[in-house]
Image (cartoon, rainbow, N blue to C red):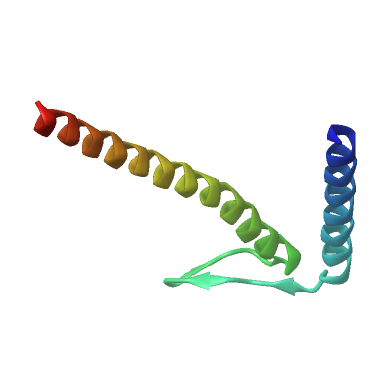
Length: 87
């Protein structure tokens, strides 16, 4: 069963890599982004889109870990209050 999960994960990663490669190859037209008056150099459309994807993939797990840690702290504090009130 473990080997099946690894094989499925490998297939998923390969399919994802193929989709990203296809996206990059299909979106080669140049675009210049402007933000608050600052103009970025012209780059292919795929570059800012993939940059946003990578930033989102990095921020998502960080926020998830933060939420789990916060929940654990609340549970511990609640458990301490219950123990202190029982005494």
